[in-house]
Length: 114
Length: 115
Image 1 (cartoon, rainbow over the protein chains, first blue to last red):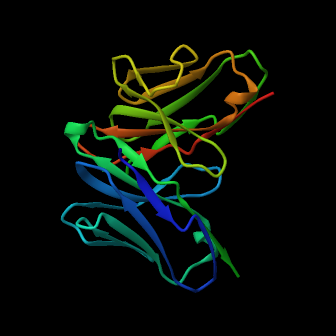
Image 2: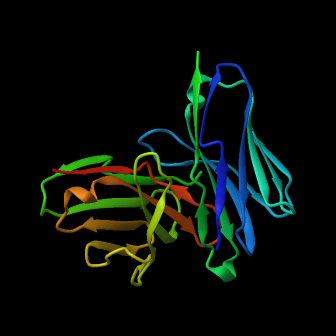
């Protein structure tokens, strides 16, 4: 069964500090992995998308890594800002032959405090 | 970049009435659109997948007669919640994917409250 597990479920960090979110998946056959940011009451917004051959991708202060061998990904937030408070969702897509099905992680709720 | 517009952003309706939610791709043609619902502090749950010009494919446990989906054009899909009940209150989100692009763009969501 395809699954995406995220940890921690939630975390609180001080403004200016860094943090790392984890994502483990068992989706097969793997196509790509995406990280989304979802503000409360809003739809998810794409941060990064990585395919099998990509190990790291950055989007401003967000840096995602992917280890396709261990089926793990991380999202690192550098120099956190209050506006980073949101849920971060890891989404893994199966290959087209498998219907491009998306499997969602449960998300990590991040609260940045001043 | 790809933009998906979803309306309304929130709606309150009485039990027994129907509510229509629209999802539009503004700058690309969306061959496939997806509808999700999300309960508080939970992740998105796929309800159905719709391809332009054909019937939607519903996930197990989702009543197709209650959640009517229409995808009549490459830029518009609608979700109609029929005979709404308080337990249908939720956050509904659409996403769209262009044929040539494997990226998914989400709408901003609709908060439905049934009273």
